[in-house]
Image (cartoon, rainbow, N blue to C red; front, side, top):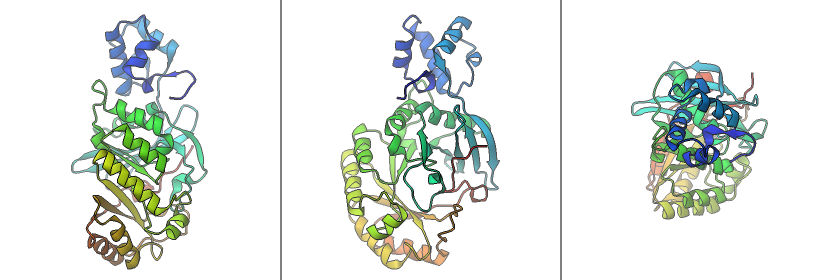
Length: 338
C-alpha cells in the first residue's frame, strides 16, 4: 500500500484496528462499513460518536473523487470523469446488461504500455491508483447513475497487473462481508500480458476472470500493436500455467483491425494456437481512439473471422459496442483533466 497520510478506505478492518487501538472493535467495524460503502465525509457516519469521527479525521482521509462530468449514451451507458484528490483525472463506465450493471473502472492514471490502438496510453503513466480510489469508482458510479452495481471489469485506464498489489487489495476489499460483498467471480481483469503479473495473480488464488488482450496470433503483428509483447508463445504458456493453477478458463480479447489482424489466415492461426485448451475468444470491434491509424473490420469479415476461429474449438463471441457516441467504448477512455 502507498505511504503518506492514512488513506482510510484502502484499509482492512485489522489495519484500522491497529491504527485505533484505543477504540472498541465494534466501533472500528462500524467505521469500516461506512468507508467501504462510499462515505464522502465523516459527518455522514451518523451512528458514530462525534469524538470518534473527529479522531478518524485526525488520523487520515477519505477517498472521495469528485464527478467532474457524467455523460449518458442512448443505450444507457454512462461515463464519469473523476477528479482525484491530487487533481489527476480518470474515467469509469457503467454498462447495463440484462444480468445486471457492470462498472468498467481505471486502475492507473495513464498507462505505460503504449498499445497503438488505445487512447488510454496517450501521455504515459502518471501514477497508480490506490485500492480506495478503485473502490470509490464503484460506489461513486452507483451513486451518480442511481443504479446498483453487480459486476466490475478492470478494463479502464491503466494496466491492472502493473499495479497488482493495490488491485489485489481492492478485490479482497470488494468481497469483504462487511463491505460490498461482491464475489471475485463477478470481477474480470484485463491485461496486455505481463508475465510476472499473470503468475502472481495465479498464486493469489482469487477466482476472478482473467482476460488477456491478445489482438494478434503472431509476434510481428502483436509487437507492432503492443510494444511490450513478450512473445505470443511465452504469453500463452503463462495463460496455461494460470489455468493449471486456478482451473479458471482464460478469455482472450481480440480487437479486429481492417487489413491488419483480421485476415482468415490469422483467424486459423489463432484457432490453432488455442485449440485443445479451455479458452474463450472475445472479438472486439475497433472503436476510433483519435489516433487515426486503424479502421474497424467489415461486418462480413468479422463473421468469417469468428467462424474460422471457432472451427478449431474455442468458443467465440463478438462484443457489443456500448457508449461509442460518448467515447466510452473499449480503447477510448483517457486520463482527462478539466
